[in-house]
Length: 134
Image (cartoon, rainbow, N blue to C red):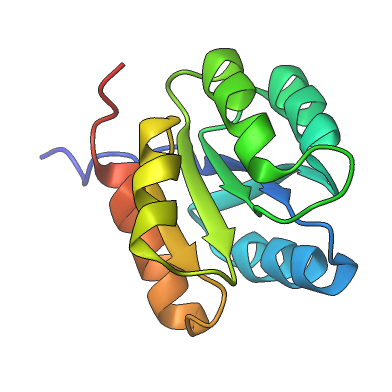
């Protein structure tokens, strides 16, 4: 009698935020979850593109307001570099016009930074479980 199917490999994650504390906490939080593994981190959009090209992640958590290149500028290039990745805008800003704009640029979702850690991880799992239409 066969056992349960093997667990899928962990989702490869790149975390992008210019605030060192936020970036470190997200890496720490997701790094403790068995179904996520941090493969890269960046502090601006230009670094984010390099990390995405280098690591081919399954999930990119992308801040919007950053120096050098913001999340809006980096998003289309990240989408081209990793068309199958789930790209989640993780921001302190929340407005309908912003949601429409980031979805039009290729983001899969927008999550607010005020979200508690449990619901945040649950949302990321749900987003990663949904098939990506490329």
